Image 1 (tube, rainbow, N blue to C red):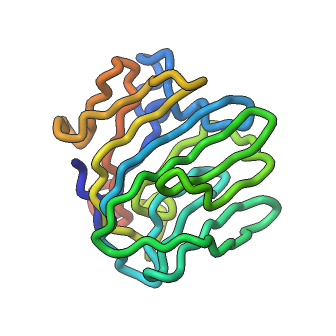
Image 2 (image 1 turned 60 degrees about the horizontal axis):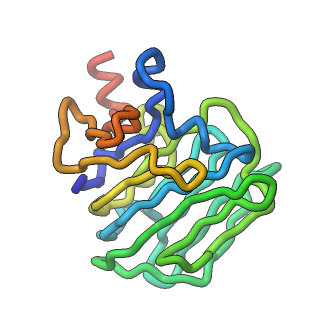
Image 3 (image 1 turned 90 degrees about the vertical axis):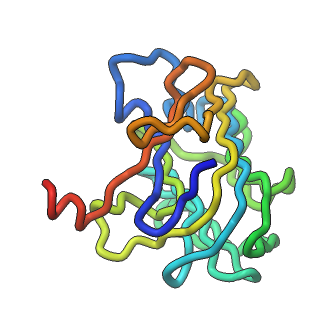
Length: 200
C-alpha cells in the first residue's frame, strides 16, 4: 500500500524515468490508438484544498476531482477544460475500484466499481502521456496543488487485455514501487515546488 497524501503525490511515467531500459512501458499506451486499462484499488481519505485530484493524465489534462461526498467531477480538456459532474459518490474511508481505459476507435472511459461514470468518443492524442496520482499536475511547477489523500492498494495496467504492469506497493525502494511483471512499469514519488526551490 502507498499512502498518497499532502506533498506526497506519485506518478506513473516510466518513460520519463528510465527510457533506455524498458521495452514495454505502459504509459506509452495511454493513447487512442491502443486498447488499455489502468486498474487501481483505492481507499479514499479526503482532500486538502477546495478539491482533491485523484488522478490526472498529462499533458492533455484529464482528471478526476473530489469536492465532497456529493460532488465528483471529471475535467476533460478537449478544446478547453470541460467539467462534468458524474453520477457517483465517493465517501471518505470508502474503498473502491477505479478503471481508466480506452477501446481503440470506440471510446475512452472511467469506471468506479465497474460502473461507467464518464465516456468520450476519443481520448485525444498527445506525446509522452503520463499520470499523476493524488495531484492535479506537477507539484514542482505549482504554488497551490490540489492534493488528495488516499491509500493506493493496487495498481495494474493492461494492454490488449494482457497484464503488463502489476506493482508491489509494499516494496518501495528509493521512492519507487516494484513492477512484478519485469516491464519496469513502476510508480515513483514526485517532489514539490519548495523542495526544488530549496535544493535545485
